[in-house]
Amino acid sequence: MCDDPDPFGRAILDQQRGERTAPLVQYDGNATREHPIESFYFGSYDPDSERGVFLDSWLSGPLLDVGAGAGRDSLYFQEQFETVAIDVSEHLVETMGERGVEDARPVDMFALGEAFDRDRFGAVLVYGTQLGLVRSVQGLRRFLGALARVTDRNGTAVVDGIDPERVEPSELLGYRSDPTPGLAYRVMQFEYEDETGETLLFRLFSPDRLREAAVETGWAVSELRWSLDSGSEGYHYQAALTKS
Image (cartoon, rainbow, N blue to C red; front, side, top):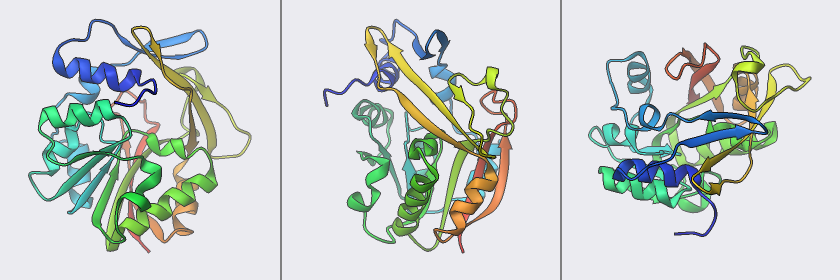
């Protein structure tokens, strides 16, 4: 295990092993919120749900599941076709292995070009709003370019995000406004037991901003789905990307 603080990964691994005795807390300054681990990460994939139907219609194999967390989606998709699950957290990779994910690897989402060959995958899933970790519009272009490189000519990708134009600031912990239309920030940390993680800076993009960046990197937004799955009050979306 690496020595960097990983309260998020530790809490989920402890949940997997039945050893979690403290909440996983998100906080920004004095504002705090308990993160709902069990419902977010340990539910089963439902192919008949609105989300399941959407993902099944856009994803094919070989599939790369980026930021796969506890492996909920990978456990389903590996039964359909080859699936590679990656996460930067070694605790989460260990969690996935214990849950039965067949190919779980510790890979940074910003090092896809070093980890995988060109045209390696037929599709990529980036679910969990970690797309915002690109930090800037330029970073978004670079990341989408990396997704284009590791997918074949008919490749697809499904990414998700938070639309700052639909957010009520008081509803989203860590929200920071931006004067530029369609953009905002989110800043927060995770805390578990006596460990505090690094400050996470997310860039929030509206679907229109995502479309602009996608076009410049060889992708097109082919379908958009708004989600209430996580109690996000309509500001959480998934976008299906195809090669343009």
